[in-house]
Image 1 (cartoon, helix red, strand yellow):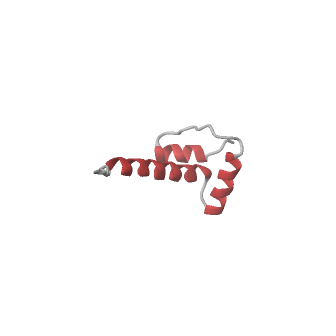
Image 2 (cartoon, one colour; image 1 turned 135 degrees about the vertical axis):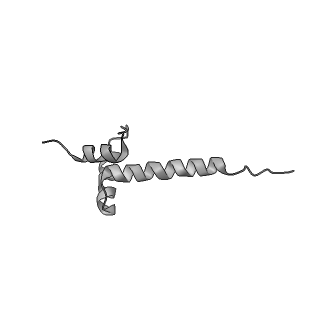
Image 3 (cartoon, one colour; image 1 turned 90 degrees about the vertical axis):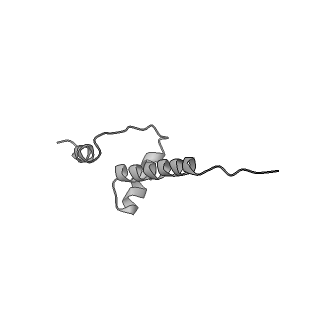
Length: 68
């Protein structure tokens, strides 16, 4: 029987995103997820969400103008 976590994630998020990463990153992500008490997929989702939010927040801020 296959991994059912994919099906649960698909129901929750409606999509699946594949990523390419250095080979040494995969075990580090799994270890960090274990320590955090979440799945690797959830840890990656949280990281992507935080990064996207940070980018969008920076874009929404008015630029500081330096007058000289």
